Length: 598
Image 1 (cartoon, rainbow, N blue to C red):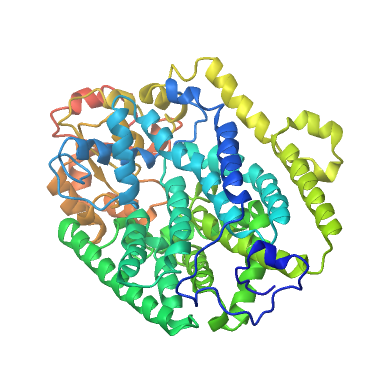
Image 2: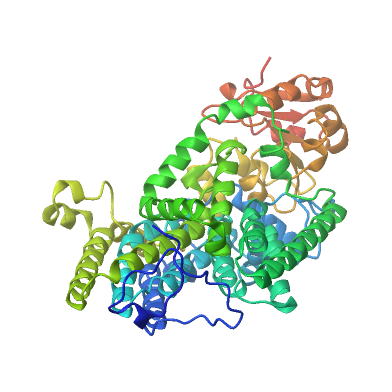
């Protein structure tokens, strides 16, 4: 597999495969990207496909509902920050508190704030819309990337695009749309943002001149706001152009882009340092820079590798051609490889290695830490298919091409059928090896439709949702939330606590929304003296050192009545009440008399 060079569709008819020594694509300054006639048609097909995939969950937008119940606890943090922004408080965790760099994605915060402005009464609807809308349009953008490049011949482009629709429809429907689209986290926003960045850089890296350099360099600060761990992509692309382009003018352009990008990145990091007191989100200090100790690392040992294996298996249809093409890029002459491709290869490798070996994967559900790499993998897979097809088509007769096209369309229909038909029907018409292991996309969509028809949408309420599904975490959180807003709560799991207590001050014991705790050794004595929380939910059991530090604190032992989780029933977290709190008697009345820990 040789990294391809763009060839006009008609130029391949009746000719041999393009040579590996063909001139690189970025040399002519006047080069204009040409599309096949079918590209925009496939763009419309992709839009139609996205609409068909997304039609069933539409009732969710009309009346918010508890389906599917995948909103992650941390997602409610974005709503809390968004509410404070809309109220003019700035980017802060507690009203009137200092600016806090507690969120991984400031870009997603801006998007959630926009959605929150039109859904002010319901945090669930806010999060579902914020997560689902980017997921809804991502397949369209990926298909456009495919249609833009998988076109060695016009006829074959139809077949290949049809195959990609069928092959990717299953995982994109089940995993991206119907799983990550309903978690409320920044995952789908990051996937869409990186896909858009690659789409833009595909054009911008063909240009020369200072104005184009500035536009291309803007990708770096925007990616920083999207997710700082995605920075290897724009920086590697600019670096590859600066070092590996065959044309001196493009190398000079790459140096401009890289210099401007680094300058912009330094300015935005400095601005964050001035405003927040830290240059990057607090989670990067906690999960990557060694602030969390070995006890937490041990609790999540092996989780990253397990999630990566699941991610690879789910998107094997992308990993195989992407891996082969990446190998071809690395083994070929870099001066004859398009810098964008080389940059994406380096970016993917850096991103995956970072999350495999350097991050504590807390709340690693649904492979969410690896998902942002999906557009880059899709890009490399598309380029690999283009390269393979360009090598094959030249030696294939016109009749064989038509047969190949027909075979591709039949394969696409077969894969699409497997992805969307009910599993019971598939069990009757498919041989055992081809049957899906679980419910197909059709079954999943129908499940959501049934929940909507049953009125689950109209009944959703954060408090009621806590009572049904979350009582095993925070003991009687709904009752404690009824106390006045000057009650101070401390907890390491803050999402639902924040959702049920938008007006209360909340101390984040994990430090992810409190730089004073995170960057100063989790000093529990100072925290109790400074914040004097009336109610403390003891930290998650995974935070063994944090629990030990709290229990070893002299002010904690002296001022608080402690209730271990074993004495509270079937709950994950114990709690403690400050005896001198004006609400102590009211809080104590919510707990059985003999529940306290001796």
